[in-house]
Image (cartoon, rainbow, N blue to C red; front, top):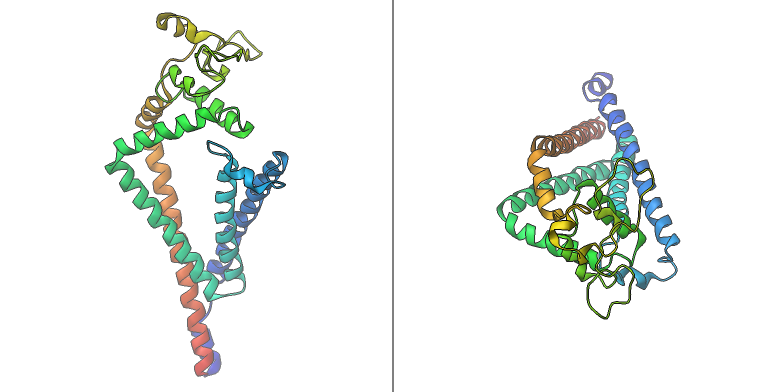
Length: 271
C-alpha cells in the first residue's frame, strides 16, 4: 500500500530542475549586476561617504544596476533554493513576488496609456533635471550622451534646454568655455571622422537657428523617443508580451511544484 501511495504522488523532476536551472542564471546575473553597482560606487567614493548618494541632482545610473540586480538576486535565490530543497515557503514567495511585479508592470502600462500627457511632462522634467546634473556624475554624463547619440536629439525639447546647465548656459556671467554650447553628443555625425570631436558643440547656440541644424541635432529627445516608440511599436509590444508570458509561466511552474510537494507531504503524513 505504501509503495503504491508514493508512486501516485511524486515531485516532478522536470519542473523542479527546470526552475532550478532557470533561476540560478538569474541569481548569478543579479549578483553580477549588484557587484557592478558596488564597484561603480566605490570608484566614485560613494561607499566611503554614503550621504553623497543624495547629493546628485539627477539620476545616478548605478541605481538601475543595484535595483534590477537586487530584484533578480532575490527572485533567483527564492526560485533556485526553493526548487532544489523543495521548500514551499520560498517557492510561494517566488511566485507571489513575481506576481506582484507582473501586476505592477501591467498597472504601469495602463496608467502610462491613460495619462500619457502627464508621463510626457514628467519625462521632460526628468531629462531637464539630469541636464542640470550633467557634469556631476560620469555615469549620468555617459547615459545622456548615449541617449542623445542614439536618438539623434539634443535636450528634452531642443538644444536651448542646455541653458539649464551652469556650464552651457548663455548668461553673460558664465565664464565656462562651453558657454552657449552643447555636449558633443548633440553634434551631427560626420562619417569621414574617425575620432570624435568633443568640442564640436562649442558656441553653437550663439549661431542663428537656421545655421545650428547644420552642426547639431535640433530635435528634442522627448519627441524623438515618441517617434521611436511609434516606429517600433510591434517590437516593444512583443517584448512586453514575451516578458509577461515568461512571468506567468514561472508562476504556474512554481505553483505546480508547490502542489506536488504538498501532495507528497500529505501522503507521508497519512502513511
